[in-house]
Length: 361
Image (cartoon, helix red, strand yellow):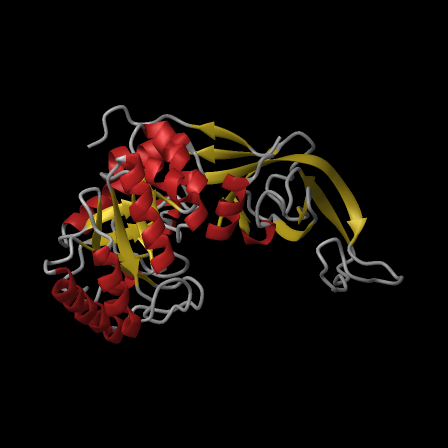
């Protein structure tokens, strides 16, 4: 059966090195478990080695982290008003932009008698969540009016590289510095938090300074993969690919690569005509698009090439594989971020956690 093989020592190494890198620049590192779903062991390692209770990207995620670690977590996604009570119960901080959500959280904290803080998200160009810079002062004033002994505005946040692929820039950083100064005027105090995300900032930081007000860097992809896409990450000693996908070979057969006949959309709605390469040796593996993003995988066995996938199967060309797999063999694959995220959220993949460090410093 296909499974995730999770090197907890490798994840701990990445969390520790990223934490130290951030601390060397006067920042705290907030581990982000968006890609790792609700895995309790990964959450524990992220907290112990990363130095902070990790952020989750779903209301059920903060509940899972709270239950696993015994500490309230951080909700990174925009909080739905309908879940305000549950969010306050399981998260000590939320990232917000909607006044309605701020009101709901303030009231929920008061009713429950549980402290909660919010960080206002500002959109500096990625065009996903967050208020526009021109809207910040008005929303901040409304948020301040909702503060009480158990509810406060902790600061500001923004993100890069998510929806539109916005890259960090001097203009964006200067904008955040100006907004932090404006927040200080409205709050009557220096914001405790200026949170920046995500891993796309690491390559930029190799050559540029962050805003003077910056306090926190949110990191998930580099923590879980040991790298960021194809860009250089200036953090020495990261463990590459601490999480691998392991699939079992179900069938190996020599088959033609193309046939005459009528072709329409395949099971995924793709309209493609297979390239005719003659007969090739092919392997059928026990995972598909319900489990991961198969075309984003890289097999650790040389010569294995991706052919295609359906909901529960993936097909690979193994004509040049060394060694050639046989039914029952298991193949290991490195994953890109989306492939990893899908795999962690799959209900059909087993998980094998390898040894974790007992004392993490």
